[in-house]
Length: 123
Image (cartoon, rainbow, N blue to C red; front, top):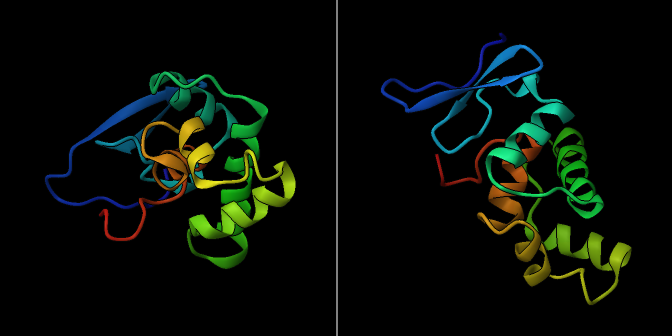
C-alpha cells in the first residue's frame, strides 16, 4: 500500500475489496487514495446503505476529475453549476445533491466514495 494519511491514535478500519484490504479512517475515507477503484465505490456504498444510480456515478466521476485536474476538492457551487447544465434546474441544485447523498451530501459522502480526502476543516 502506498503511503497515505495516518494520524497517531486515529480510528480506522479495513474494508476488503477484491481480495485486498483497504485501510479507511473511522468515517470511511480511504487513507491511500491510490487504492481507489470503482469496486471500492460499490463496496463503500453498500456499507453506507446507498444504492448507486447513474447520477451517483456522474457525481463521483465529476469529483474525481475535478480533483485530478485542479488538485483540490470540487466546491459545491461548481458541482451545482455543472449539474444544473447537465441535469436541468430540477436536479442541478444543492437540495437534490444532498438527497442522493444523504450521509453528508456531495462534499462528504460524495468525496468519500470518490476517494477524495475529507472536506477542508474536517480533518
